[in-house]
Image (cartoon, rainbow, N blue to C red; front, side):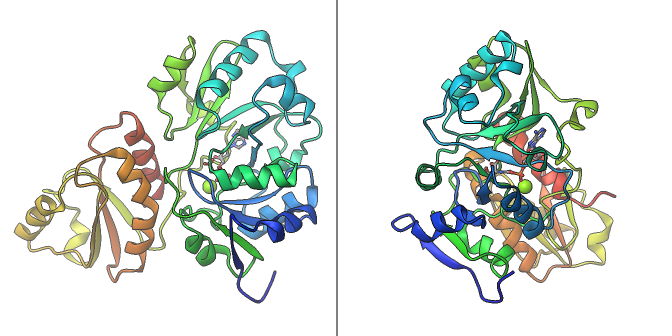
Length: 348
Ligand code: TXA
Ligand code: MG
């Protein structure tokens, strides 16, 4: 742990970050989804450092990020990341079709791991999550380091994922030496995570790449993982991405929860003009301390991009609790937003 604050680097000069990765240290890294906390995936002490810096329990496996040259099963096997020999032809076909369609990009695929990837990375599972990030700065660091980078989101465990370098500073600035500033993340929610079977794809975590898009890329069933399968994705704990104050997702703002009679609150409007919600609340004599509207035009890409920053801002506002309106649908990217809101919310 360092007593001073992390130094912010830019893509122009990554030399300090490259040196840090080479000596087994961890750095804050921009990706197109959220910021990651990156370390050499082949270095057990770097991986241990990722877990301790995040205060993440060891049962929650890390995603391994790879350079854009590693598109095929054979190249990823030769690089010591996945085990192509343990993959059936069906699995290889699905993997390569999805890689061809969505990489580099916000898709993580869970496949058999190479023995060079330690059990620490995968939390003892025999499969590893692999993702080829699209952010040019992430790719630049991968090329310069010449090792795959294990990187979870750069937040303290269970808290809101960071989508700017400043968020990483707030979360981990006193624990790491460098944060690379790549600007605000374009997508704003974490990658779609899928487990690849011989003739089926399991959706473990919804993200920017939606079920319909996956279906168009591969001619096999895409299924949302049932709870039994969720054991294979131990990180999908019900409570996650959580603000410090209690948060409630409200489907009918005209019928607000009773606790608003006694508690001050902040309001997150996921879609549409907030005036309607504010009027309905005012009719009940209720007024939020602060309001953020994610997308007045109900555009899910805009809503996703601003979601975590809005949750952080409202967490700092004076309301005792946070109220979020439900998404207008659970189609496409709205499913990922609805999933994050559910996990952030206080279970009653
Ligand atoms: O967009 C993203 O994926 C970001 C950026 C930094 O790339 N990373 C990220 O990592 O969200 P993290 O650690 O916060 O979430 C990884 C998720 C967890 O739910 C974890 O349980 C699951 O992926 N996962 C990783 N490896 C797995 C494996 N071998 N089997 C099943 N699930 C796995
Ligand atoms: Mg995370």
